[in-house]
Amino acid sequence: MLVHLRLTVPEALADDVTRLLSSRSTTNLVILPGVSREPRGDLIECDTAREYVSEIVDALEDLGLADRGGIVISRPASTPFRRAGELEDAAPGEADDAVIWDEVLETAEDSSTPGISYHVFLVMATALAAVAVITDSSVLVVGAMVVSPDFAPIAALCTGVVFAKFRLAWRSAALLVASFVFAITVVTALGLIGRATGLIGAADVTGNRPQTGFIWQPNHWSFIVALIAGTVGVLAMTTDKTTAMVGVFISVTTVPAAGNLALALATWQRAEITGCATQLGINLAGLLLAGTVTLAIQRLLSRHLQRGARRLLSRLP
Figure 1 (cartoon, rainbow, N blue to C red):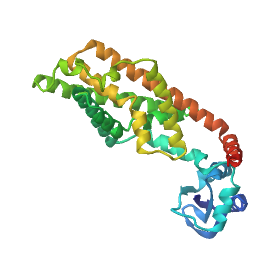
Figure 2: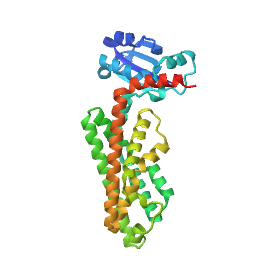
Figure 3: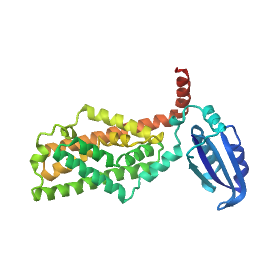
Figure 4: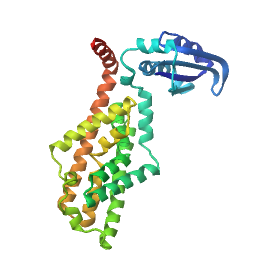
């Protein structure tokens, strides 16, 4: 599948941009001189393989187009023509492995300053996890994981570290901490209300829980799962393969512990408070470590990995 580039180009840059795009790595090159009003200049459009996008955008930014003009990246629903197939076949690596780094950065910026809906979803996910603990329901644990949006600021924090954008990293870290504190505080307050009305008691938290007891009992597997989840999450984000199941897998390491922690605070079960807080801390550390390392490796070796993957796959029957 090709990627579409739509560029508004000032007159002073038009010739340079046209020369850059007039290559074998693009097709459907369209130049409409003088039609752009802001900035005043040309409208230039073309299609290219996903593998070439970051390279082309970097070159456009070096020309100054990002500061003086406009760059819009979009994906056509379908490109059923011969030249598209030829371009994709000629591109190094596989499209699924290619990373559009400007897209990753833009997503990270958006994820570091989410709106009210983010906090609502995290509170609801934490509340579902708390109910899962009370009822010892693995089904509700899965429901909480589906609802949770917490990997977005984690990925943004990893991105900020790898790209040395420390303001982005700081905003993401602050959001991550503040959102979990807020969600746990709200669910703790609900737990206190439930305890005061007799809806829940300490036995609901400390009783035998074969389906959910793992939430507050951290061990070495907790960190291993977090490392795997962080790696999968970043790969899904950078290669545009995020699915509901990826979200479930990632959230298994965070939201259940937050929900259990809220209940433990409401019923003041010190052992579970310590266990849940430790579990949450270990999991977040594992996610951040794996996510940052994975993103750094992709950033450093993405072009080489694409070519290597193409050579390896070409040898398979």
